[in-house]
Image 1: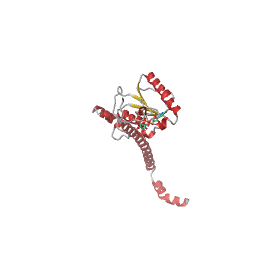
Image 2: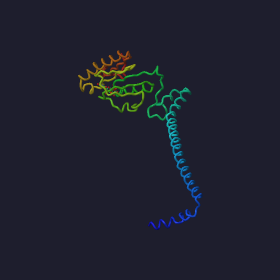
Image 3: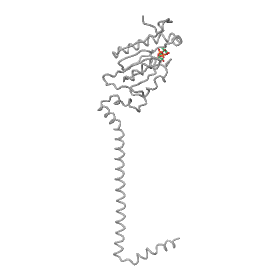
Image 4: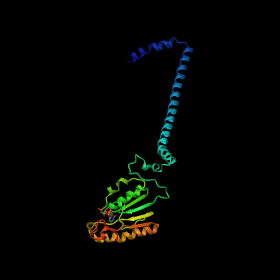
Length: 234
Ligand SMILES: O=c1ccn([C@@H]2O[C@H](COP(=O)(O)OP(=O)(O)O[C@H]3OC[C@@H](O)[C@H](O)[C@H]3O)[C@@H](O)[C@H]2O)c(=O)[nH]1
């Protein structure tokens, strides 16, 4: 093996032996210079490349972050307020909502907002551009009635029993939380009475504290078994 290597290197050593001393120096110097240039050049390019890549990545991240803001600004400049709201753009997964200026936008609590009447009221208030807080204990209400708003920046869902006090900041309260149909309000009559007394008192207290407007809905059950449809208010 050693013999084979020696034989392979023979031509090189042969050349080396017949070279003058000066040529040898020049040869060694040339190899050294070449090695320095290659190493230095490689190190320089790698550093520069890394820096350039880092800068390119950073500017593409900034461009990505700015794009929706620029789009929104463009819409604002064009006066298209409906598209200025990110959630009202065509590709939004939510129903279209109006854009309301901060001074016109109300924060509204709907108790029983996951129920039949409540969820339709919630749709209307959301589409009008308000902030809506739904509070429901899901006795008869269902999350699916309001699920199309879950995650929207104007929407909040609280699983809370109105019999317990609630401390939040709102401008208006629609108080609809109560078992509505006879099988439901007779299921636990004492709880129904508590909901309609203590619950209503809690919501009145909240309205008083925040100086907010208050609406209490009754039920068509108060008419008994009506003989005419639709029922009039007399
Ligand atoms: O203690 C309670 C009791 C009830 N609730 C909630 O209050 C809401 C009441 O809504 P319901 O859907 O039961 O009653 P609603 O009055 O909205 O509609 C009802 O009356 C009109 C009919 O046409 C509907 O079919 C019927 O559901 C429910 O979401 C229920 O979970 C509370 O949050 N707390």
